[in-house]
Length: 283
Length: 280
Image (cartoon, rainbow over all chains, first blue to last red; front, top):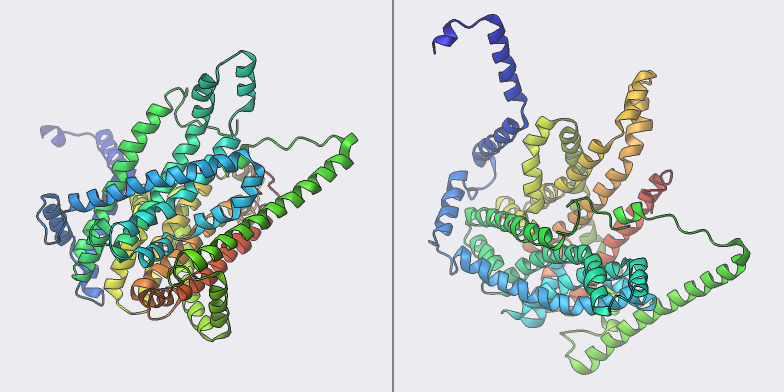
């Protein structure tokens, strides 16, 4: 403390400079943006044309209750996400089982690619909402409609990426392998599979993203449990803190999937690469 | 896009066999159209067969019934009413989202501070499912017309912003420096250096933003709309009228895909024709 009393001019200038650096730092900007967001949220509640908007504190309370497993909904957040996750993984497995052979065929044969290309592209562009509603009309309430939605929303992404991957298998490496008498098994294991892997990952990523959106919608329209249905439950109960709280759970869930599962998996699969991230598929 | 950009240029056709190569190309094109037509024919045949023999009409109506239904919609005045309602929401919402996203993108691309301030929110709105925004907007705004527009803005602006950020960050600094050294006035530098460079990013932003906009607009109309494509989809859904549902879906998605792939992509190719490495 005594140092302040005897500080000299240069010290003061250095202090000012440090202060301005702190003010200009992106990290402070980040903190400020969160504070600004919460303040705007809190202030704008009376301005909105409804009484249903919750305060940040109410949302936090809701989330804390959910995390402790104390909820008014029939399913806790763990059960809801568990149900959805089960449907998602089963549906994705089926989508891969369908999309993989079609993708292989379309990648290997030009004719097959011309034959099916337009349908796959329409399937890619079709919003998952449509699949969810169609599956709901076909199968009614239950487990099957969400499952079918996942399959319908995901398989085209698998097919198109696998086809692209097959077209990108390095032919010269295969030729060289043949010239040196590499066995068929080894050339599949060491040439074809590694070169397919980036496309596999792209397929999984896009299929997962689209299927998840479709699944939530299908549960909303045609199910009696799962994460999508629980959101609908809070919507019907006019509890916006439930919807926003679940939205934040969705974001957390997406982050976990992205960081933990995809990060770990791709680090493992691509461990042979000299530099992770420096990838050039065209070469 | 990246694989296209890094792909080597096509090998030159040997001039000696030019005629042969051309004939082969022609044959290939013919065979391509043949197979494509075969694909459509097979698809329609399977559909017709399934709906005639395997399942009942309300599960999968035959293509003819849907075509009839579509014709009925096109000739009635319903088409104009509901298409206009949805397209209006998309146009206003996407317009605001594009301006907002561009401003945010430029701010984030030029200043680290703004990047820190806005970065998290762009990422969060990007990863939150559209359904959540739709439900919250439905709850806050009820049946008012503001709800769908706000929802489109909130969902689409981040897609625009991330693309603009990419562009602004990648803008050629050396050309800007050179323009300054040669005293090129600001507006000319903007017109001849920055805008041409940013054009592909703006178009990508517009394509993604538009694609998200029309999907979210129909979604929120399904939930709370009083008119529009989504509203009609919900009405047909609730009365279990598969033919009507598919007719509305096919009509609207044909239009949306035409705008997205046809119009926007063509504009993009035109704007990019001076840059062979990004033009498709």
